[in-house]
Structures are given as structure tokens and as C-alpha cells.
Image (tube, rainbow, N blue to C red; front, side, top):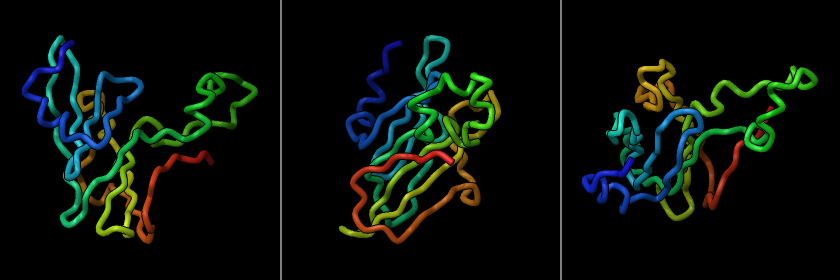
Length: 146
């Protein structure tokens, strides 16, 4: 499926672009928003955009995947590893970093709406968003397992 030219400005402004594993969704993160692009039925459409809090600038975003899942997805089906289950937000949340100054960064986790009809849509209810503060300059991040 070709991405329509109407999305060029959004893609040109991107600071991060990534896909979710099990749905045809591409997330485009710009300095002030995260927009899921849904690929369905031969058409690309934009879903509800999550806007970054006022006064903050988004610097990077990634799909939430705990480390062991990203490296060893196959072990979750192995009975010898039954006690090792993915975190509830694995492949169901987006993590991003914002800046409010040169050395003032915040980290966020936003869950996705979990019903199938809204696959890939970010939950815009502020009470569902996790915010972590007190960081200096964040250059990169990864998720850790249990």
C-alpha cells in the first residue's frame, strides 16, 4: 500500500517512525504529537493523534517491548518458560521522551486502546498515561523485563 502524498508533511516532520508487531499500524512521532497511520483495505488513514503536553517537545518514541520479548519471542510458547509471560503493555503501548529544556527530559508510556476495532489507537485519557520525571538529557532508552 502506498502512503498518500497528503501524509508527506507529517512524515517530513517525524522524529521517530515505527510499526507495531501484530497490526498494520505505523506510528509517526513529530515534535508535538504521535499519529498512528492505519493500513487497512488498501487504504492508509490517520487515527486519533496523541498531543504532547504543552511546553514539551517530543524527541523520540518507540513501541513498548520488554527486552526478553524482543530478543526471545519464541520462549513464551515453551512450557519450560511458563513463568515468563510478557508484561501487559508489551506491544500495547508507546514510550516517548520529551524535553522542556536542554537538560530537562521526561519519559512517558501511553497505552493503546485494547479493543480490536481500535487497534493501534493511543489512549488519549491523561489518567492512563504514565509520566516519569527528573531526567537530564535522555539520548536513548530501552525497556527492561521483570
